[in-house]
Amino acid sequence: MSLTSKPATPRIFKNAFKGGIFTLPSLQRLVRLTFITGPRALLTSRLSPRSASYIMLLCLPAIMLYLAMTVPSMLFQSPDQEAYFYFASSLNHDLSSGYMLALSVLCMFVALTLPAASPDPYTAGRS
Image (cartoon, rainbow, N blue to C red; front, side, top):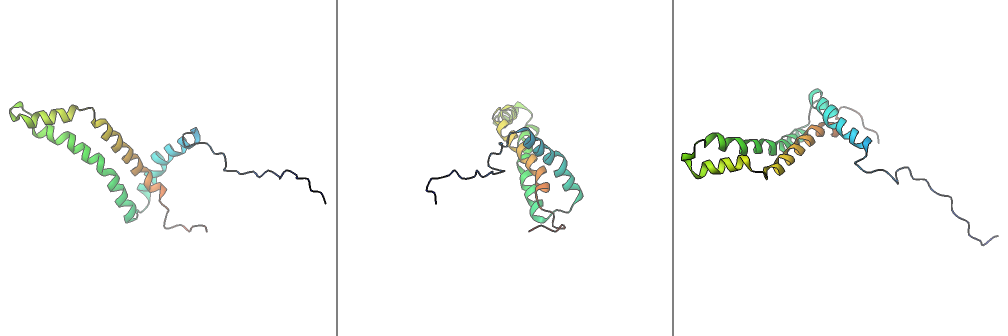
């Protein structure tokens, strides 16, 4: 019986050193999921009420932004309406609305991806 220590056999973990989310294959997979698989699943399968309500809620920021940017400038078109006209014109030309625009675009992309990410209720799942 030997009391000298021997090095243990190295364990190989397949998923221990994965690349980040911003690698080329993962970005290609995300783009494919968003623009091909998601809309295809949206148009060809039945949606559950839960998935449909999530899609509607994710589209709500884009709709609200569109209404906030267009309705005041359509209603108050002349400078005779004083504060309302200047509010509508500053809202229409404000650069801080870019954040809301980016958020609404992100929500729309997630809404396109959502049908592909939800499990299909008509297929048997593996356990």
